[in-house]
Image 1 (spheres, rainbow, N blue to C red):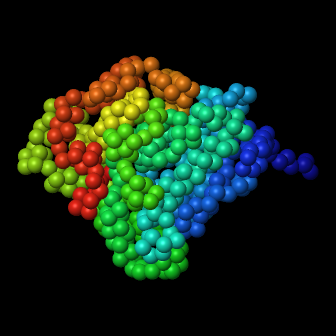
Image 2 (image 1 turned 180 degrees about the vertical axis):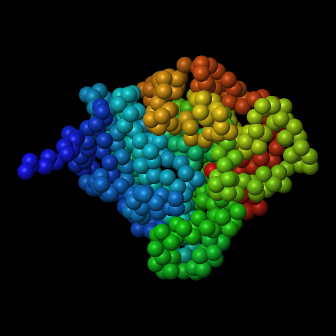
Image 3 (image 1 turned 90 degrees about the vertical axis):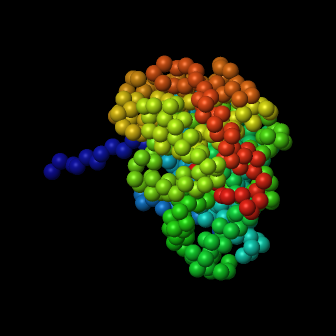
Amino acid sequence: MAELRRPKIAVRPTRTIHAPDGRYTGVVHNGCCIFRGIRFAEARRFHAPQAVQNRQTPDAVCACPQTGLPFRQMSEDCLSLNVYAADSDTVKPVLVYIHGGSFLRGSNLDSLTQGHRLAAQLDVIVVTVNYRLGIFGFVDFTSLDPSFCPNPAILDLTLALSFVKRNIAAFGGDPQNITVMGESAGGTLAALMSVMVDSSCFQKVILSSPVPTVFLSAAEGHERMRDLLAFLDISDAGALLAKPADWLASRAMEFGRQEGRGAATFAPAVDGVIVTEAPIRLQHDGEITPRPTWIGVTADEMSILTLPPFAERWKIDRFLPREIALERDGFEDDLRQLYASVYPEQDVNTQIYSDMIIRISTAWYAMEAAKNQPVWCYFFDYSGAMLTKTRLKAFHTIDLYYLFDTLPAPLRIAQNQDVVQSIQRDLKAFLTDGCLPWRTVSGDQLPARHYAARTGMTELLPAPIQSFWEKSNHYKNRLYPDFSPDVPPLFDI
């Protein structure tokens, strides 16, 4: 009988580096050295994280417990990072990426932000970070037990950045040229890091569709915590610690649905201990360390809300009435009339939600930040033929597929790859030199590079839209947050 031949399994070469915090091993693939599952910290539930050394679990990279990830490992022991280093001998700029997901979803294994292509193509290092989410990362339970800490996720990220600063040279990175980038909720956290963390830890910031005005007051945070405990039928720390992680994650999600807050259930609070002030207020007051900043939004951010599952998750049917209730009589009629005139061929609700939830806050933050450091903007308005035929178009997060070059195989066509190369050229320039070849934000002028079929310039917001919102209570609440208990909670990602 002929001997059965076993199929050959490709064995990728490995590489081991010796860094100040330990010995880490990665695989080399397509011009990139990939180091997965590097543990930078560990933490007991609701406690401050503690740095760890010489720990790596590449085959057991876990997301923080959450709903909606049936095929991925989840564990509270999730504080790890992945390093994607271009396989070259150069000293490389470093990009540290903080994922989004409404503060309750996502991980550093999200397919659209895998860093191997980006690192190899731009000859840089990409670091993707996990942090605690939802009930585990953004609820202040210190009233139950003083050994707990408020905003555990914020401390997770500060430890991750410290780890990168100490160790990135061993991977071939330049510790004096580190950029922190975040998208959506991750952009909010990146904005917070930029006003919290010493400038020696990182030097530049990229905010992609952030909501840098989402922060709760301490009083709002405590009220939400009390409501959550009542919903969970828990009254003491012991009972809270005894519950399984998956049960807490699931019930916390259900709490958001019942409360009608949807994706706005969890957010950082200005607790006075970890977070002392909202980033936009610190930018407004000039109490920050200047860092070159690149800020961008997409042309159809909230088009995803035309899909019923997302509309239900976000509780969008309750959003606009709640916000309009804070405004003058006749505000909604004037709002809709204005948007119909500015966007005559587009869905008015999509554009209103896009502005109220993301673009208005981003624009105001950019104007405040520009008083202290150079700020460039981009407006991602490219969607390709297939998405143009749908109502989604240039939806929330679509820019990440082009920045990271992670488009699905059927979409890796020449025209789309031209856009990848265009936006990656700008990204490489910013990562390398902290400068971009167009005008910076100045006063109320928001020049923005756009990436439609032919790269050009536009304004981040149409002037009539910008002027209209600056006369609203929405503007006052977000630019001048006083974080008193009588300020209504804000709805954001």
